[in-house]
Length: 210
Image 1 (cartoon, one colour):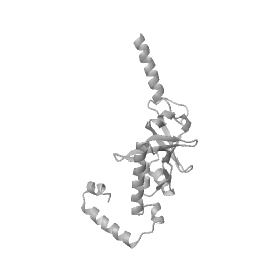
Image 2 (cartoon, helix red, strand yellow):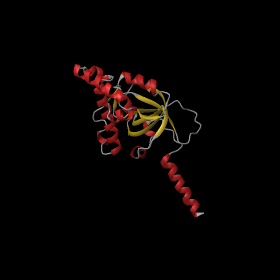
Image 3 (cartoon, one colour):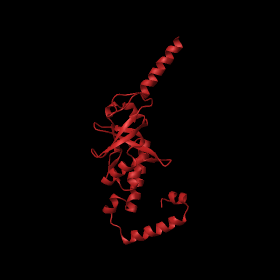
Image 4 (cartoon, helix red, strand yellow):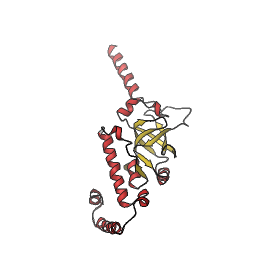
């Protein structure tokens, strides 16, 4: 009997910690320990809200879903570290809206939760922030992740954003097409780079970041 009691208590504690039945609809409902442990959550992006720096309105999916009477309220998520352009909003509406995403909560604000957001696309796992940045539809928001830079996962995420932004700047993608004027030297370099890329195996070209 004693062992059953211990097992029941352990199960109750585990259920309390992971909240398998909880459906998060507002930032304050997410436990702080989920942020500390960077617990991945899942949900469907129902629509894109172009306020507060562009929000993904997500219908959060609990680990164990239960029938609910009201599913109209969605969790507002902001892609961590980024400012999204008007073209980026259109990209999100086309590529991400209606799809299932995985999001790791980092910071809770009153209006939204800043998250690292990813999804499956064509059997490939992509990080939404990096993709937006690489095509020039998102720009790094300076100092937005500064307070969390002691965390190695956040540092790696920020480095990936920086790499993607440098690529976008070099290619004059999206936002950078209007900010950095293409010079004759740049055009020649791009022509040469494309010729080199065409004769190299795809894997090697990716490793060389060509």
